[in-house]
Image (cartoon, rainbow, N blue to C red):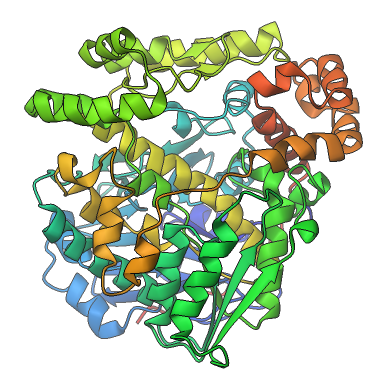
Length: 640
């Protein structure tokens, strides 16, 4: 069926209606026991009715029950029963369990039943999220997939949320606007509590959010932070691939992918396949650095059988916007601007799977975590203005920021709600000479948006500003965390492609322990205009050869996007000829058709079209995602 879901989980109330909802879930052909992959796992309430129903195509379900208390973890590895017991036993309340969970590496959904209440959470990085909706008969149900909840509750699409997704970057809290009405996202770093019904009553109180995660104070030295980061990266890599015999890594040649290549090598798989996509740009340095990394990993022995390097020739790599119809193979939680690059990602993962790889690692998240955004100098200026200005002066000269606008931006004290209310504009995206020191980057309304779309978008921003609170009171930390969470959303598209072709894909940098280790380092040492990713470099000393840690450049693929607009102009024209976004009154299809015929138009230089393309292809998938519900009941698995 179109809109194939990757894995999903659903948390149901202990009621006859909740049991009935379980029978309406999409059910695969086979049922399995917990811990494997490829079927449905059901963890039961004490009554025997389904509590957690999961279809973990790749991830593993671990669970334990002790009397009325129970714990379910869904993550990259099987958690031993002894570890589960250590987590659950002695945890008298949620806070006690959270303290124990803080030592667990990997990326897990957590579902627990303690003191008569169920609570659910994802990750602080936002890669694992939780949604909830009210079912007419069953009450509140929760899932990690909003499309599942929309299917179960009959929720219609929300045009306001859809219009927002035509922007390139949705700042907090607008990124939480779900594409279906009545379906709500629990914020990253927050959990969802589902209280039980009081004795003698039929209805349970409504759900409530609680905060379970706070960013650590930035008080560690670079040396101490590097030790913690190195340990966190190694632990996350082991949680994903430890014990597997055949592994693959995307080795672009950049520092992030090189780091994970050597971290994967340290787990001693029998075979490690490294994949590099050659660049069309003759000035690109990535392939050169990738070859150096492979030579270093082999230790100078080119005949090492455990390590293979596969270079995909540039002329075999699809341009952006290739094979747009293939996006119907996955139903992402939302339109993602990376969707036009799906064909390129699919090629890379298909080649990785062809090597026999059982798990694929990528360096996604490294830029957001380790580059350091200019907004952070606002934070540094409060505590150490001389150091902040010294660093900012170096950055200003590198980026060409004029002096007076930089000073004005640095001294600006606008509140987050005030910034958010004006964070969308009809002007193009800021040019490189624009100082970026506020709460985020203003978003541009595109010339092909309709008046209706513009009104919806500006209305959403104003409404959000009326009650918005920042992720963190410090401007730079707010922007840093928001950027990580947005990157984690984008990575979902890569995970879904991997699910489609049968290859698990991981981004260990989105592990909460990695995020915490990064944020815990003093700002003046974590970022620098004179050093490239200094924290990651120091964390990897002794793991990655120093010669590879010396790289200070980064390649980009903007030419592939522009060439893709030309090469796939007919496909884009077909897309706009029968535009679903136009049917919703959100885009001017005639304007888009003209741009398809003029791929090098100045309009497309000033305004990216990728998010609009992503919205169009996602909408076509979402509107045709469901076959009639399969009401075959799932098989409950007796809890341990």
